[in-house]
Length: 290
Ligand SMILES: [Zn+2]
Ligand SMILES: [Zn+2]
Image (cartoon, rainbow, N blue to C red):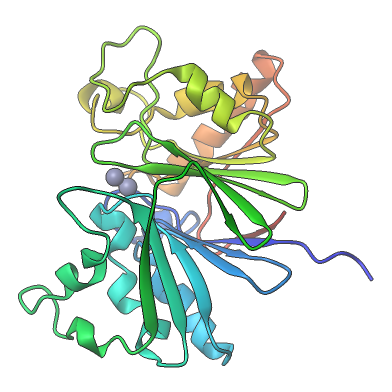
């Protein structure tokens, strides 16, 4: 019998705000959410952007008890806003553990309740019948059953985590909302930034999912906002000898044609750099088998 692989599904690929539209139907309009379904049925969900709603509906249709670990990169809207719409959270048979960074001004336990206050939301947080627990991550390495998880602080306003997962001889890195500074730029850095740290963290990854929000001159205007020019993600992946780079956190103003162009230009640029890294862009609804 062939060995079962881990399935990675993109439920939301967009950054900042949902941006549905005919011209975005290929890469999708929902904000950050990725499902990792492991062969032993373990379920890890990365971020709770609006994409998590559709994932929840799919899990409900499977008609099985849901036990999931939800790892949040940080608590900006586009990474948490789908959580109150995650249907399995309303079923008492289900158990969810939500993980994230310690933030002095914002306890992780408030990530659901604060956005469900009556001024913002019609349903009270007390209606969430599932067993929901919250765990702040601080250690650099944790284990989720057979999956080793490492964290590194990203260059983004507020404490933001990048996650590296090692399982079954595969290294997957999820690095969204991370501003890579061009070597010449004097951008404001939110952390004690060294590019070497990032390269060490991603080194040799089979799959790197990286923030590639800006193209063209956008970065010049939005320096310090905590997102990368797609070309910086590309050079980082090449320097880190990553096998496959997946551009992620697409700008709400980028349509399918533009993202297609970035992938095409990225592929050509990697070839020019004699890098063997492959480049693609995260597509809502697509599944990769790792
Ligand atoms: Zn974001
Ligand atoms: Zn953010």
